[in-house]
Length: 364
Image (tube, rainbow, N blue to C red):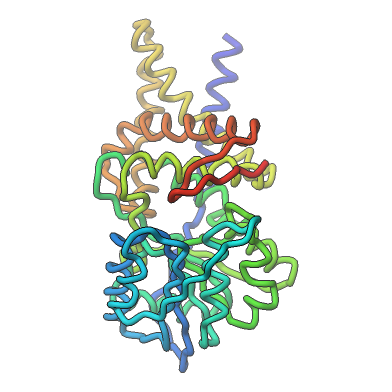
């Protein structure tokens, strides 16, 4: 009986942990006054022939025009370079990536070196922008200094709904939405930084071997006492995460999850662990009590339904997730837990994960 009450108390504490983690999701502000921007957009790209044309088309229709768009081709084996030329972007193709460099950082560094603008905006190739998307990013930058945006998650295929828990944890574990935000890291898909600040912290060369380079860049900003802000986008600044299929989703999660977890402060890790254990406990006890025909099933049904409502509401704030993803949340939850265990195994035994055709050793 004591065990039941302990489990129930921990389960309820998980709701409180969730409330703290997502106290206030910081939305990217609407467009304010944009003063004479000198903006260079840098797009690191490796084998992005399907996504790059969409972003370049979006950039051609912006209310705010950058002085240049630079595509830094990270050794693509498809038509990425040709597409960049066709859209009139400046193509940078750094060769002979040295040992010790992660490809994205290598591309970003060379893109920044080629840039002429005083403001550098790094965009992943799968980012999509509404007509005033770039203006909103620049406006927030001019108001707040260095900023980063986690794009709104567009979801098109069934397997992509499995990202629900992962995306929530990515935002929550960053401390972005706490009552007093701590902003552990930047969000890699969208980063805006002054040229001066970028090179003052050593650019991407300072994080050349980091898999989660956005977290390391944030640490260098803190060390240099350069403030930064992070936001969550909406339909104006969005992306479609891992559209190439389930395998890329699995590898992408594996690459990021355990490495990020190892860098998460204890208090944030505890809050996330309490939330995940509560979500898991509600689902597991509902199943067990149903199978056993126990009267307590009604209590767990209420607790499960409450989690489904909470996850559904949070999912709508960060992406276009179907209500079914929340109702059937044990599926994205199982995905999260499996990837977490698998990536932890790979890190423990110094194994590699394949990402965009390259074998990457996970950090300990």
